[in-house]
Image (cartoon, rainbow, N blue to C red; front, side, top):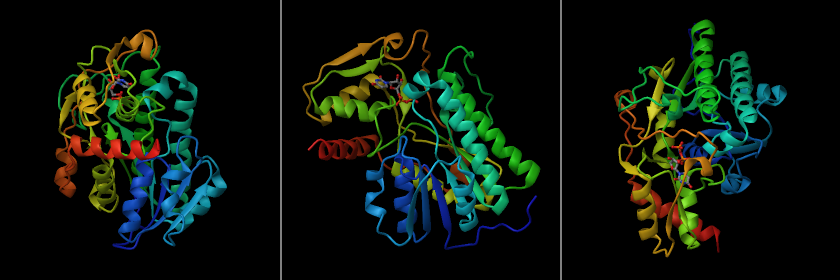
Length: 333
Ligand code: UDP
């Protein structure tokens, strides 16, 4: 195990992989605001230049358009930074169902590449994981120590969870075997402005549909529930964890505590946008793929993260929805 942490008490140089993505760009905003030096690497496959355009002229920020599988680029970046926040991944249920090979390979090979370069320069690494790893678990709320229950391997959906579990295992292996400072965070339905609806995410999809007075597409019977968490709360937790020695070697749930059914969410979006949209129910088979399995409830136990850094979400779902509506309205004009 390494005895001297490379992470000094302040003034950090931080690499965000997937830095032009939804969570990555909000994290860059926060870290820059707090005076850190930020490098953002992104191949813009799902991230967008427009997410970070406002940061480009900031002397504390550098954007590198590259694939994290590019060893030369990653080695050079790792030699400059003390912390890596690894967010680059193939995410979104729709993407997983449509492109399972791409999802599995991107998530596993990408994390392997990040960890290999991090090891050469002894960087601390935060690996972004997901509440999907709890799969079909039914004991609520989900705790980091719970066993996980995934569906069978002929259902693509579970490929995402499995790939992220391998990432978590790989990170733990680097910690246990080489003493690299690694830890993981399991994000539960992170939402907010800049999220794309292209890969399935429900809130940007509902908001766009409502703003255009198009049908709001509720999958299944809409009784499934989620706890949404505002991205601006999520990135606060990420920063505090990344700077905390006590996080190393552990996994943390990060999520909100306000549960809502998808049908109620559709109604709420419709009301907040004064929309004339009709709310329609679409069978899962049609929305995703035959035999698609959804989970009914997904609630995080945030005791561990709360105990270490005193974090809990603060922004209400209504406030988040209002900022997504404002963002999407601005975009469509
Ligand atoms: N969903 C929906 N309509 C859509 C997109 C998603 O009803 O247009 C549902 C989806 O089936 C799931 C929930 O909304 O039950 C949340 O979906 P999302 O993809 O945002 O995240 P997930 O919880 O599936 O990771």
